[in-house]
Length: 394
Image (cartoon, rainbow, N blue to C red; front, side, top):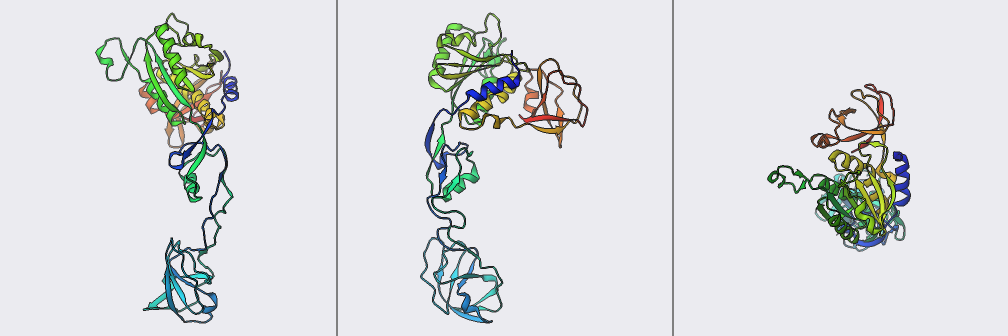
């Protein structure tokens, strides 16, 4: 059995991007750039007005009031003719500034008299013109490789006239839930000893949240032959297979044996943590296999601690970026921890961390309430209210 930090180091060294692809920009949300995004055009493409008003030559406003004929209008998306000396052009926000004009006077200080504009006073220092390329230039690196594409970065890429973008491929994930007791939610009531399969749905949702593409999810009883078949099918469909349950050493615990015929190579087996000691990671046929406990809380805690960095690494991110611990004060005390590193489920109480009263590894109501994991080192002494502890968003 190894420590949590040792297991994380092994995972981080193994989790490497699985490939790249080009996708349309509208499909790129949540993806990681695999190459720099280079602007294809200037932004703005020409000098444009920053306000609604009148484009003029500075020299024509030498004295006030100034009265100039309005020779035309400039709208966004149209190129206006040049402006002649002694005239002005009605202009709107985002519209190109006519050649020859060197400032825009905002409409609030201009009086319109038919085809004439009257400038009654000095308009101030601001010229209200956004110069061509003042945001970025064609050929300039706009987004660096490794950027997580979200709404703001997608706006910037689209503004640079980029229609398709080079990203790391999303890891394909298959989830195999093991156990004779499991039944599809909604059908467990039909069999007295059945338990709804909640874990596989939660794990699949977490995988999708962290960039994985869930391509298969199956529920298999404790039959080694059937499990081996399910394992082969999952390995053929996915880059990462997640197995829930069957991780102990009982007569029907086949989570590891089901991959033996596929050449399973363990990277680690059992980690000195609570909950989730049975968590394991291996490779089979060049694919990753992550084994999670069957108890719901243990499964979701270990998925948050091991699945999310694994998916991050496979999707082109730093695996450690998914485990951003920070300090926060406790709302109520914690007892000493035991001989394993412990992850306490907690929620926010204002700016304070409130440990949940139910820390059972099978608790599911408490799991729904948990917002944080509190990290407690092995053999840590009791922590008092107000003491700062390490927390991770759960």
